[in-house]
Length: 180
Image (cartoon, rainbow, N blue to C red; front, side, top):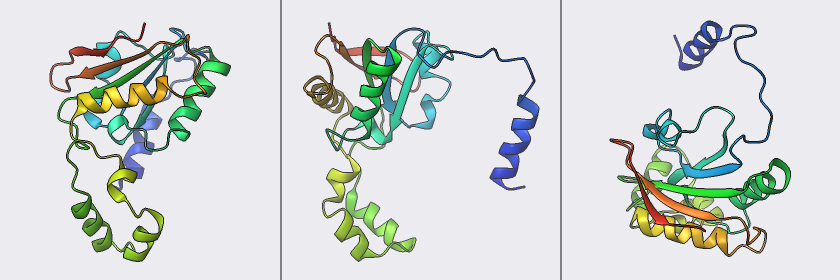
């Protein structure tokens, strides 16, 4: 059975007509969470924050980094604020993040080994380390991302931008930046 087949089978078992009441598109707690795509956070971060389905807008990418200060993360936050009622933003990094200390040369070699043309890499992302969003330390990354969001001319100054670090082992949160 392929991964796709197992997903579709699981979905058939999951879906029960009428079991899930419709929810509004706007988050019930008027907050957006920008965090990492790490699999250890799935079904763990939100419950650790007291967040349930429908409570928050959750944005994820590798390392919860912003490599383009006017790109997709800011775009999604602007939509969340101005069309969906988000009033606070939480940037949440985590301990033991794979993006901390990522070796861009090893990554490039793995890409080439899997058939990516080296010239395409050089042409499209001449600075692979910057493009991929690698960083040295999750705490300083959270501080940097909070600063980028806070200083974006597209984010209203009355929207608090908080920074936290999450532990993927026991679920505790540490305050890095209190956005009020």
